[in-house]
Amino acid sequence: MAGHRILLVHPAEGRERLQDRLETADCTVETVSTATAALEAVATDQFDCLVSKHELPGDSGLELQSAAERIAPDVPFVLFADTDSETVTDAADSYHVVRNNGEGSLDRLLEVATGQSTEPPGRKQDISGHEPTTEEIARAIEEAPIGISLSDPSLSDYPLVYTNDAWESITGYETQEVLGRNPRLLQGPESDPETVERLSTAIADEEPANVEIRNYKRNGTPFWNDLTSHQYTTRMESSPTMSAFRSMSPTAAKPKHLPKNEPENSTTSAARCAAFSSVSTGY
Ligand SMILES: Cc1cc2nc3c(=O)[nH]c(=O)nc-3n(C[C@H](O)[C@H](O)[C@H](O)COP(=O)(O)O)c2cc1C
Image (cartoon, rainbow, N blue to C red; front, side, top):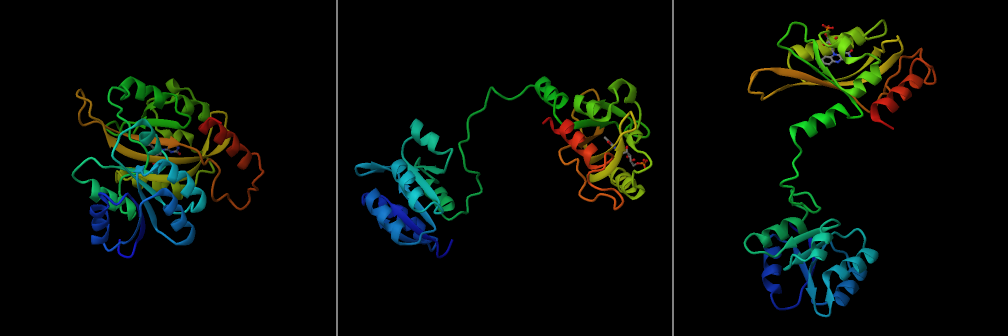
């Protein structure tokens, strides 16, 4: 990024190619060779970024990072490391580490030092062999602390084909009694017709929708449902074209806009909301 001021901490040997690369992007580069000189520089001057080689004469870039953070906590720090040691890998959890491992390293350093990197910071671990199985994902959905339901649009009137544990505890209905019925069974006298209409249009158009709708538990207790629905297509071999809707009744059960005649501490609104919220989010 043009005009970016970078402090490059690197022994003289091998420094030029880094400096050249940063300057080709119109960065202004100040250079020092040691950690001590770098700390003096950040204490007295303004920089947009501090780039340090990992191995410094009599010091390490890691030590420089912790000292520099105390002096200039707002200046991003990038460690340019030749090694893949455990300490360097750990450092990547807290700040940017660019590995000097051949082609592309300098381009990557430039991107990170100028804030142009699209890669998120933090260590990226190899998770191969740890991918969840379909059963584990299904279990996570079953036990998720938000209500999740599935309807099948290939059947008339989109009947429910699945509800998870949280959906049951939020609504008070048991799964077996609602399967095969449309989820509008949760609506009642205070369900806003315009909101219902918005849902209806979105679902007919296969568009995602997010509404706050007044719903009713099995025992008649009203609650605010922060409802998101969207359509997805499954890739099941036995039924390749089946699509279904997913809806959630997540965190913010407290409505952003309570009806005017309903005070926040009323047992039918906020108090119920809080109860719903605690059920749906699991705390
Ligand atoms: C998967 C799915 C879940 C739904 N969950 C709810 C819900 O929890 N509460 C609700 O009031 N409506 C819910 N709806 C919306 C209603 O089923 C229905 O689409 C809405 O009332 C508009 O259609 P209607 O005008 O035919 O009633 C859900 C819809 C789908 C597809």
